Length: 238
Image 1 (cartoon, one colour):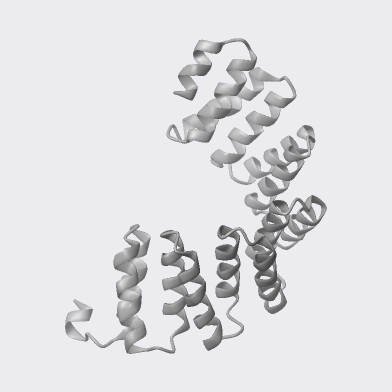
Image 2 (cartoon, rainbow, N blue to C red; image 1 turned 180 degrees about the horizontal axis):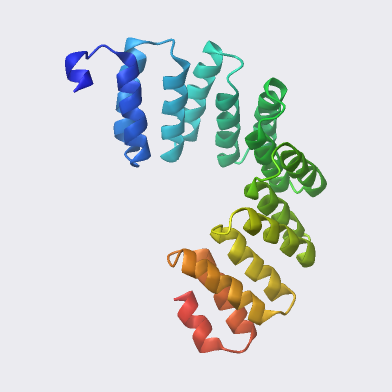
């Protein structure tokens, strides 16, 4: 109705784009952002939102072009720098991603998302000490962020430090009891310690929260297989 009354209001087109994007209608959202940009080419938010929508369509190079335009309009746009880093990460360029996260952190040293994402990029590079330092910084800034503890746990798991991983997953679950990934990952860690009963209990909790999570069924299948319950394991894998 608003567009019908005032079809040249860029903000209304931008807002419609956001609503469509939230509904998973990314291509339609991009059409709205394009209209907003046509009416107001200097609106960094429309450029940035278009970049996000393109990223959800796996069009990361085009997304980066949009983030660059947003940054050109506002060089201190932390959100655009962070999302540009995520797009580089998806393109398999973690070093370039880290440069973007560093820029975001330079602008806002307390931007937790960039600390976490920088940690993930270091993880992808196999620089686990640096990854943990980033996650610890994120935890220092925002102690109730479950995602930071889960990320730190993933490093410990990869390094074979399963007890330390479980402690971090426990903290993530304490902060967010419905964190499916933390429950299933905790189950995998228990499996690595040969504690298959505890592993299955964790996976069952994750399945209770989200019965359609494939990672959880995989984790439960592993635990059952290790217990010698191969037929039950196959049911989980299926």
